[in-house]
Length: 251
Length: 247
Image 1 (cartoon, each protein chain N blue to C red):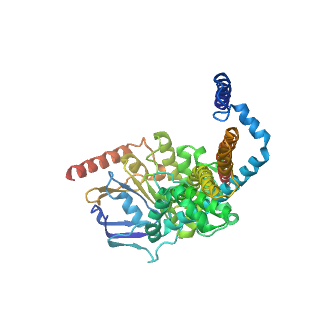
Image 2: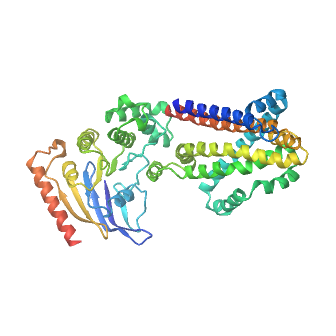
Image 3: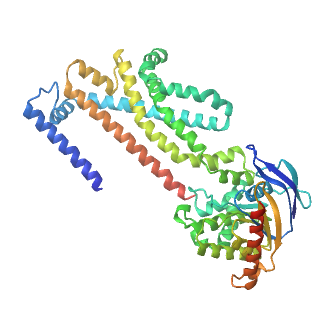
C-alpha cells in the first residue's frame, strides 16, 4: 500500500514539475504541451478518443483470446506429437522474430476486413509467449507424479486433464500477462499501418491524425489513453489469474 | 508373493544399474533394500512396479497374474503431491484414475487420511502442511487403493530425525494393522535395522544384491534401546564396510 502511494506521489510530482517547467520556459504547446493542456485536449473532444479506445481494446482483447486459443492448442499438440513439434516449432519462432510492421501491410491486403486484419496482426505478435509458456508448463510436471499416473494406469487424456494442464496453469497465466501487453502493441502497430491506408478507427489512427494536424496535446491524450489501457489489461489479467487459483484450492 | 528372477537393467548411457539380481518376496514381508547411491535400489523398485522394463530376467508374480493398477502403492522420496489439490483430492487421485466417482471414494479417502492421522487436514493444500504431514498424505495416497504391495523409495530421507522416527513408528503400526507386503528402500543402516524383517544389502558398479541379513528383531515391537538392535546395526555396518572395501 505504501509502495503504491509512493509511486502515485512520484507520478504527481513529475506531472507538477512538467507543468511548471513548460510554463517557465514557455515552450509552445504544439511542441511540448503541459499536463493541463493535454487534459484540456481530452475534455474538449472526448467522444472520438473514447470510441477509438474502445475499438483498440476490442482488437486487443479479441487478439488475446485468439492467441490464447492458438497458443494452448499448439502447446498441447506439440507435447504429444514429436512430428508436429519438429515441423511447426521453428516456424513459430520465424513468425515471432519477423517484425510485425513488415508483415502488417501484407495482412491488411490479404485479409481485407479491417477489424479481422488488425486482429490477425495482434495475434501474431501476442501468441508466442502464451504458446511457449504453456508448452513449458505442460512439460513441467514432476517425473515422479508422471510415474504415479502410469502406475495407476492413467491414459494420455487423463494425464493431460488431471496433471499436465493443472501443472501448466500458472505458466499459462504468466504467458497471458506478457501477451496482454504484446497484443496491445500489435494492435497499435497494425492500426498505424492500416490507418495510413485510410482506415479510421483505433487510437493509433487518432495519433496519426493529430500528428498531421499538429494537435500535439491530442496526440498526448491518445498516448495516455493507450498506456492506461495497457495498465488496465495487465491488472485485469493479474486479477483473473488469482481467481482460478483460489477456486482450485477447493477441489 | 513375487520372485525377481536374474534381472539385468542397463541404461542407454551404458551404466549397468542392476546386474543379474534375484530376490524372493513372501506375502506380508517387510524388506529393506539398503545400499549407497547408485547401487540400483530405486531401479529395482521401479522394475517391480513395472515403471521400467528389465533388459533380461523376469519378475514372476505368484499365481502368474501381473498386478492390477492399485495393487501396488508407491511412495517417493519427495511427497510428489499435486500442489493445486487439497490433501483429500491428492489421496483421491489413485481411485479417480481408476474411474471412481468422488461420492463412492469419499469413505476410502477418509479412512486413508485417518490411518495417517490427518483427518483434520482434509482440505489443506500441500503448501499449508509441514514436510512430515506431506509425507503422510503421500503414504495415505499409496494406501487408499488397499495395495497388496507397498513400495517406499527413501520416503523419510528428507525429514528431520524426530519426524523420521515418528513416521517410522507409524509405518510399522500401519504395516501391522493392514498386513500388506512392504519393500522399503533406504541408505540408512539404522532405518533398515529398525524397520525390516529382512535387510537386503546392495552394492554399486554394477548394482547388485550382495547379501541378505535376516533381522532377529520383531518389527512389531521395534525398540531402539534393545541391545539386539545395536548388535544388528553393528553387524550390518560391518557387512557394508566389507562390501565397500571389496567394491
